[in-house]
Amino acid sequence: MKQIKANIAVSLDGFIATPDNELDWMPQNVRTLLNKEYETTNYLLLGANTYTCIFEHWGGWPYKSKK
Image (cartoon, rainbow, N blue to C red):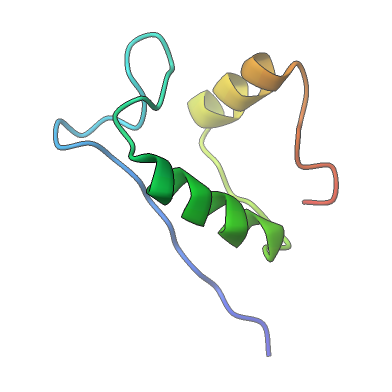
């Protein structure tokens, strides 16, 4: 049976990224853990702003095997 996992990372002020779309506030060990989670994930559900930020940062969709 498939599992559904929710992962929401926000800073104390309620934002995911800084005004310049950086995640500098997030400790490196947390970013590493999130990247490992993405490796075993089949689907990603993102908001429009997060998708746009990722797309612009990487110059395209970096998770080619994800739906």
